[in-house]
Length: 116
Image (tube, rainbow, N blue to C red; front, top):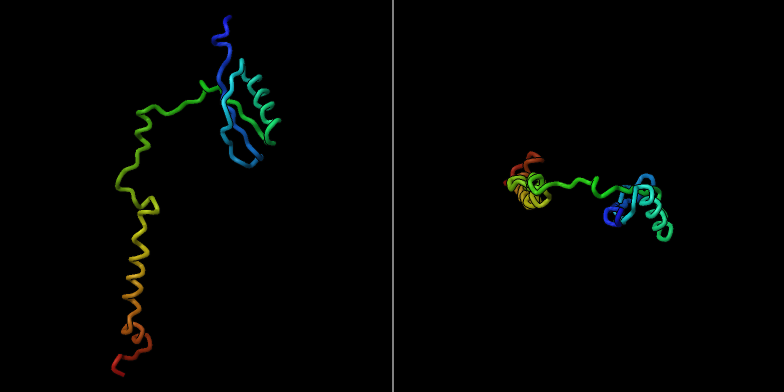
């Protein structure tokens, strides 16, 4: 067996604590999953403490096809889903408050008319 095909690519993920999320760290070449895990552990023993390490064979990772990526395109009529879609509300609310709290409105609360 030649050297070509002997090593496989693995992606390494880690968790700093048991409750933290996984973070991608690096790729490595190893002949199998067990040695990939050992190599990843050796790498972390020299760096930072971790609570868990995941090793995934790169060929087992599925990414989206160009056709599938099209489904991620946002529709243009959905501005209300982003905060910039609400930018006009502060101005609109200020205008509403100014209209509502004019002198005539305030005087009407006490049952008085402006001429009194």
